Image (cartoon, rainbow, N blue to C red; front, side, top):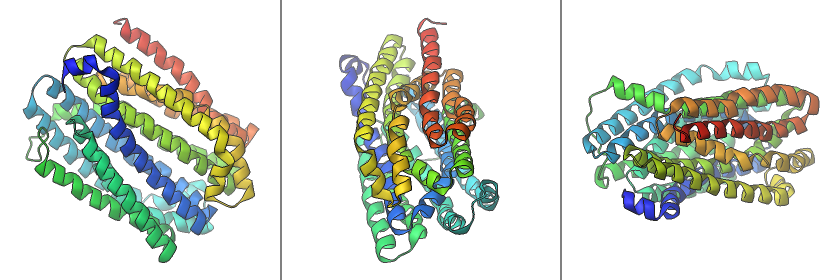
Length: 438
């Protein structure tokens, strides 16, 4: 990275770091959508509902992985900005060791929680069978997914985001091919979907390890001395991302609980289908956040506070424009989109009537995500954690338990817009306070 180049070409530099990350994240989300397409068309709405009931598990892994990897990348980025390459590699190896150890342990714990989770949700029949078939395999795949994503953040931090983008393209294409092979031809159903994800992820991991063995110039695989201080700072810096994702895990569980109680399987299926759009957009905003955070932590570590603020402002404008574009697309094509996944008229009507309401949240959610990334990148974890917990847990849970019982599915769709609007005001308050030097 070069300060003069960043100063002269702020927009171009943000895009150079963000676009490969966005493409990588969107490609990752496309895997989920392609999985949903095959499940909806070859298994049915019960299969879609079963996969959605387990999304809190996925968010739990993402929470753990993001907390450790984002925290580690921030520390490594600041060290890189100050010219300390030795610390960079040490933090990198400690971060990845921690990610691998904790995700494997998490899979062991979650295995014993699958049946209790189904009992709490009152899910039975085909939904319960599909749930256990799918997540029994995914408990092996999810650690691989988190490890790949964590390695990818360090690849981007090294200034080689294009390589990770190319690896993700391979991952998506392989996943789609295996989905088609295992589900369409072999008839393996949700087990085939999970196995496809596992095999594609394993190939991706091999390509990533090749990069660090043969191509990396900053982060090198090797021995390290475990540092408690680095561990503490890593967890602190990544705490907001952990809170954000663990909040999504809790809120998704609450969504499923409330929708099953008040609407039924059709409501869960409709929410799953609309959730794919939200997932894609969240990947876009996270891609912007990951791309910008490397620049922000580097410029902040170099003492360029004004440039740091300018990078945040420009990135917020970009995600606002992206949110408006996605919202308009949803308003124009929600009925067609719903019919891609299921042929159930009730579900398609729910998607058509609710997607436009939900999509209004995209105008604000991107800015909230970038503001959270910004505070993490400059070492102000408290503000970032408050933003993440407000939009992902506190306000969201309040609206989840208040609105749907009275407004049905309309209340479900209103939860996200109201949450993001209120969180925006909170984030702007923290930004003004931080910019004034308080």
